[in-house]
Image 1 (cartoon, rainbow, N blue to C red):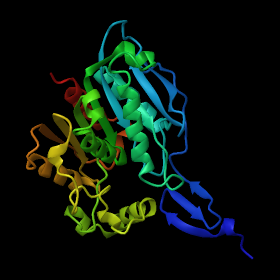
Image 2 (cartoon, rainbow, N blue to C red; image 1 turned 180 degrees about the horizontal axis):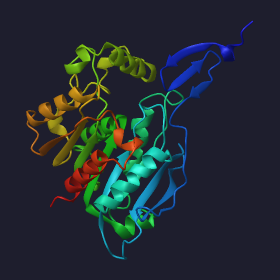
Image 3 (cartoon, rainbow, N blue to C red; image 1 turned 90 degrees about the vertical axis):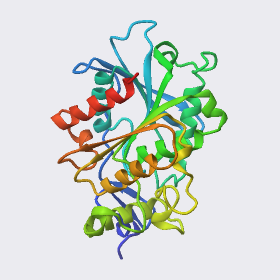
Image 4 (cartoon, helix red, strand yellow; image 1 turned 60 degrees about the vertical axis):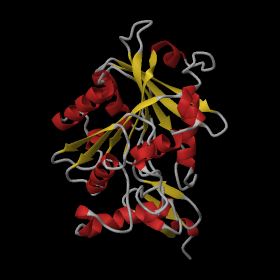
Length: 320
């Protein structure tokens, strides 16, 4: 008789497998690299536990050349991985964020939130919101204890950033900040959304003909969020019935980056188009990575296209 451990309950190709005994086997996003000084970029990083109750942590980055009293922009970053793989210690994210920090001369708080399915959604959103509270405690200079934030951050230049599902969370957090007490404590200047993970039941653009990849994305979302609305759940479809208006985004600027060969490309373009037409009073920019696929920059941050994207992000963050 085949044991329950050997019997597959759900295949989330190509990233994860669930067995009938509840065991979860991940095939990607499990590698880790320690924090520290990156000799290639001169960027320092360290890990810190920020929410002891839920074990939510963050990896902090800053240029090692930063002088005492020098205040830099802060990017609060949410990594991708479909809500079910990867971490802030993933070498793909670690190396790409080192490149971004060096290019933009910024401080980054890369948030390590809990993953599904062990921690079903909206746990990742709750952790990301709690991390914002932790950052905001440093804005007044009184409550926060993290020296890198107190000594090196200009809290007049704070941004949310993320790729894939991390960009999705940045969107939702910016909506939630509007009119909130936290939004008054932490003044978000802009959002940088890299290849945002949005979806929907009704296909748009290339989704209409790319049935194989569309089926994969459907499977990923219904695995982590088995709601009655499926791919039209408010968390994944920002334009479905009941979704908050984009004009509520609590920031002045948004950069949406899409990749030409990405199945999610047309959702990102649609987001930019609807944001421009929403009545939101800010400035929205759209950047397209020609010839590239989803989150290409984390697989090789040294390509010319990746470097060009980092330069674009740096320009967006440092724009006066």
